Image 1: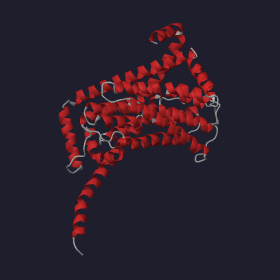
Image 2: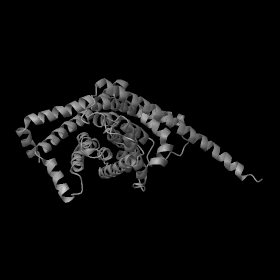
Image 3: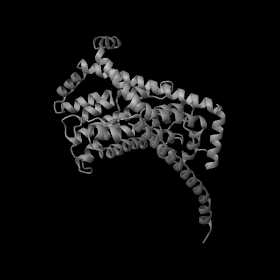
Image 4: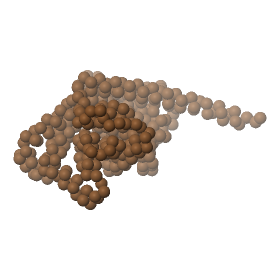
Length: 396
């Protein structure tokens, strides 16, 4: 297969070069500014003990809801506010630091890797469909279905012998602060070294991500030139003649790469609700290009990828059904776009960085506020419980 790929590059150098440039542009204009600040900030927060601090605060929320340690809330927030493959990067870090078990990491990685808000709220509704209002329903279904799967996954391998337990002592903001100080002391790196390590790690991960984007861009171009994608479409439509070839072609491309698959679905000759449902299914599956990135980020851990792949299949099916049913039943009213679906939204470094920075700061403020409120409620409940018991035991 590799020899075949190299020969194709030799015979089609101009097309391969153009595909490489396209992949490089996608990485530089969208992925780099939207993920780099997240990766650097999360590396710093990991070294400073903020993850341990928030984990202690949010343990009473994460354990009963998702059957995960409190530190999983950090991954959930970053995964939903930044996109692929930040959830996998952070899950791998938690597992390496033994802040979660292998089963907990497998639960976590299954529902914290999403399409980025920029892609769902801007690129698809505006750039592909010409429907700005479509972004809201896409985001609700995409993120909501993933959260639903996270709730279901709390029952996955519940008899985990390695599972961490809720601390027996009382959870307070003071104890969370002590946990932060202890984690910072154990890390021990000076601030300058911590910043350097954070930048080095973030750049390394981004270069890996960029390599995957360029490689799969070239691979998709080769498969298109050689007619492999059209051949798969023809084979499937021959076996299942009732299926529309446009839908099969979109899903075939989306099976490999999320952006090209979504674009093909939006430009097909199908009805509007069918095109949107296909895009929802492609977003849920996310493509083998994303799966390869996820696998590379956890390759040095004992986290298994099979639960993640099965969850992506479930996410694709549920998202497609929810979107089609919502639009077909008239719960959301959409019209055909007023301009061609080939219109492309132009991202800039400034706009991308500005949007991601606001999402990042808002997510962290919400996470910190939620953690403090949950811990205070837990503390108040523990204080009131013995009083109720004492009153109930007094004879009237």
